[in-house]
Length: 155
Ligand code: RP5
Image (cartoon, rainbow, N blue to C red; front, side, top):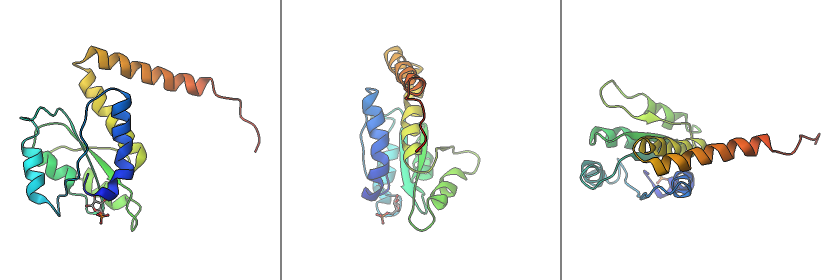
């Protein structure tokens, strides 16, 4: 993520990955404030054995795009909800990549962070049968929770 201030949002990605038993690391790597670290982090991602990168950033959110420019790994971008523009700025910064360097862009905020983790797990599950079973179980439990919910009552 681009800043420690993004952690409140990006913790949902980490929590989701941990719930699914997917090993991950959480780092603050800023495209603006630590550009050399970003180059090193994304540039060494393949050789370090990373499989997917989830990059969360807000405002002028260059991190996912710059990350994707430096690695061929799948990069999923999470637009963090900014104070000034509610994350619309983050979303447009991340989603409007020119053809050639893709960033899979998720929803603004918590839903995007959670879904980025689920998408990353889905990618990894294509070559990991045990993870595929855990992901299927997560989805089945989610479905059952909705179906077995209490009947609605007037407030
Ligand atoms: C971006 O600027 C970060 O991703 C963060 O969402 C935003 C604000 O950062 P802070 O000023 O809170 O560190 O680079």
